Length: 315
Image 1 (cartoon, rainbow, N blue to C red):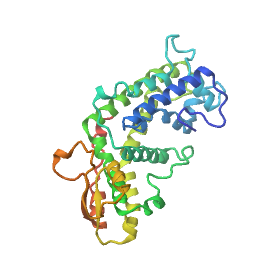
Image 2 (cartoon, rainbow, N blue to C red; image 1 turned 180 degrees about the vertical axis):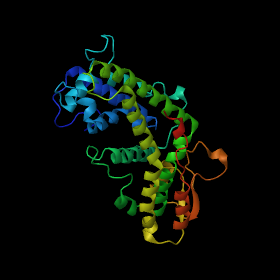
Image 3 (tube, rainbow, N blue to C red; image 1 turned 30 degrees about the horizontal axis):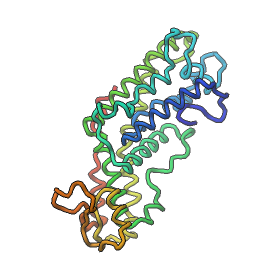
Image 4 (cartoon, rainbow, N blue to C red; image 1 turned 135 degrees about the vertical axis):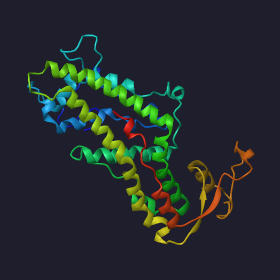
């Protein structure tokens, strides 16, 4: 199933539903541009997760799971006021958008690290929902990593190592908690009415439903550090072709390293470098520094990847 909860067995959706889903995806894409992917807040994937709990959606209506989603979450069901905005639309509005991201003040994560962060969330989600999320390839492809030069391999490992420190930054933490509370509120309001409308003793209580949502979120967030360090442990033996001997590598941002690699004539491998159009030349040092790095240094890097330190702030 994809983000909407649609799967191959779902009936066709209406144009209005399709437009609503498109707006939801567009909102998520806006936020990804800012470097904070909505993998941080995939309240939508919780809908897919509910497939494991037939007691929630076999409410006597005879609907398939996907029909139940369309009738209860992607439209305004009869048991809600006519002014009720579909739950899926409200969840979409909980996400930060490109228009308000700067006012929130959340820092922008480097692009490759952001992609790895997305993948790490997906890996932890797959653990909870293996029957549906069957295509998670891991965070970094080992074959691709093996083919990189040591400087690029260091870039990958540093990007992995910065995921949880980023999530522990105050603005990122606050944005996650705020958005999670918003999504949680939508689910609470909707499910309370849904349970009250269902035949007696046919669906779990609202309190039980929200407890399941809370446990789902905490399981995913708490699994990020383990997913990252596990991936780093897989990659470390591949560094520098498996040679433990320290080698000189260039340390900088991906954009600067990429520009350096395309220079003609090339800058010698052991020489620092600053782009000629660099606006930060006032720092008095090269943007690319040359540092000796061995596998032991990278093991230390992996060992110091911190846990998410705000789990207790979640409901």
